[in-house]
Length: 94
Image (cartoon, rainbow, N blue to C red; front, side):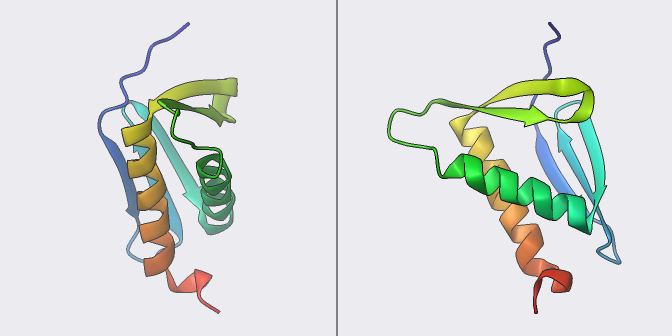
């Protein structure tokens, strides 16, 4: 089992907004708009399962069948970051 450092979390949109780069510690992903939309929907579905007893959220990444466990604080940062990218990206607005 590999241990990954999950600090910091960053999500960056390229200037033209067609690629999104996500970094969770030393886990780096780059995806197009459609893949990012799927990722964002996945994060939103996980957020609906949070209750008052939730301390950690398990995040399953397709890359190498990797499952990571985020603290609730880190998950909320990730969730809000994906929402911020969506709200700034005109492609999502119809």
